[in-house]
Structure formats: C-alpha cells, structure tokens
Length: 268
Image (cartoon, rainbow, N blue to C red; front, side, top):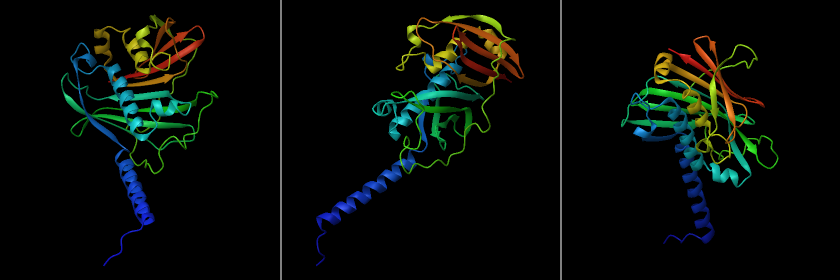
C-alpha cells in the first residue's frame, strides 16, 4: 500500500505547483491583448478613431497590463514610485471606424537601467492599423531621483517580443528661432490627472485642437513623436508654436519657464 505524503512533501508540492502557475501566468502576460470597441466618444468628425484617442488608448492599456504585472499605479505608489512618460512615437496606418471592434496589444520591451520602452499595436485581423512605443522611467517620489528598473518587473518575465516601432525616436532640436505662433492654450481642470499635472494625452488633444478639421485632413498625419519636457498645471497658459520640418512640421508648447513639450509630425 503506498504511503501517504508527509505534510512537508505536500507543502513542497503545493509550492512547486504555485511557482509553475506563476511562471505560466507571467509568460502569458508578456503580451496584453484585448478586443477594443471603437465607441463614438473616441471618434473624430470623420467617424474614425481620433489621433489623440490613440494616445489615450495606448496609455490606458499600458496601465491595465502594468496592473497585472504588479507594477500598476497603486502598487508603485505603495513603494513611493511613479511612472514617468519620457517620449512617445505612434505610427498611423489606417484609423478604425466607429463601432468597429479591433484588437489592442501592448508589451514591455527589455528594460535598461533606468529607462524602458513599451510597445503597442491596434490590429484588424493581421493588419496593423496603428503602432507605437513609449519610453518610460520610474521616479522615486521621496528622493526625486530616477529609480532602477531591475525590481520593477516580476522575476521571470521574458522580453522576447520585438519593438512595434523599430528605429529611434525623432530628434527635435529646441532652438530659439524659426518658430511661428499658432495660439495659446489654458490648461483646464479636465486636463489634470492623478499626478496633479496635465495628462499625457491631453497635451496631444490641445495641440491637435489648434488645427481645424480641414487642416488636419490636409496634414494627413502618419507619425507623431512627442517629447515630454516639463509638467504643466491647471490654470497655466501655454504658447503653441510651429515650424516646418522635413516631411511635415514640428510643434512645441512653451510657458515662461521654458519648453513643456516638443512634437514632430510626419505626413504622407
């Protein structure tokens, strides 16, 4: 007759099964993928997903995936850590239509010491509709210094997916001359997020809102690179400036203290 397992043996077996489940879960969670319905509230006048809504969607999916990986906003706040967006690049191929269901995907790329990229895609079947990547850093809110990323992601998480946007981010030289005033923008209460400053997607909405729908149609934007410089706060008045650039234009938001945001737009 086989002998019953000892308590220690059962405990070790349970621990081993728990580790195996954790490893399987982490492998599955390397890429976060969900269907996404394009509702009217995220569409523009043309009945397609708006450009600034793509930025918001990608940021939201990053937060959802981070929550599953144990480094979401609440978990990070408990460790006195806060995710910072450094720069973002999004390439637009074909914006989905209102009430169309597409697939949204996101995954972290292999992190460096204090900075890391996260990739994003919107797909219709196998067709890529939009692709992007964001460079992130983690701020220690107690010290004000960038925190090392070694302990931010769970142990055993693999980083095998290639970048959704291979190649470098745009380099935008912030010179004094060559800019033309487009207008001003006062930061609204509705622009402010949990961090107490202007939300990343709100910057893009404010900039694109300085163009008419006719102008946006003529621009036919195919790529946007956004570099975040200085946070902006409720009530501040920002100057919107533009200048021509190869294949499109460059924009910036400034305030008396200096440049808050730089953007490069590439048209088809």
